[in-house]
Length: 91
Image 1: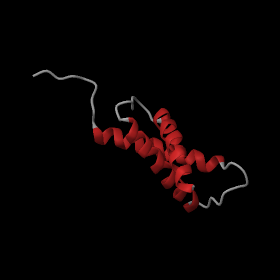
Image 2: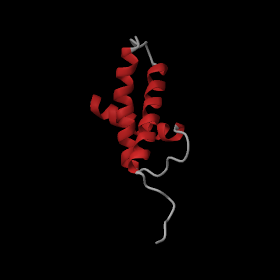
Image 3: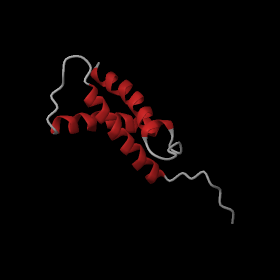
């Protein structure tokens, strides 16, 4: 059940990360955005714990904010690596 929660959270966090990422980051496919979101959830949790986060009762907004920021960084990296450009070059 936990893996399904990470996937669902990854979808939401990936879309939020794409929204938060600076510039035009619509040039990566949806599946890559979802993978960035899942990575943001997992890596964000480890970053949160590494800096002393131990969770709180209820919704831990700090952990989710870290996950969104990590996902935004992953979206920027994925956008730079895939390099799909919207401009057409003529030969």
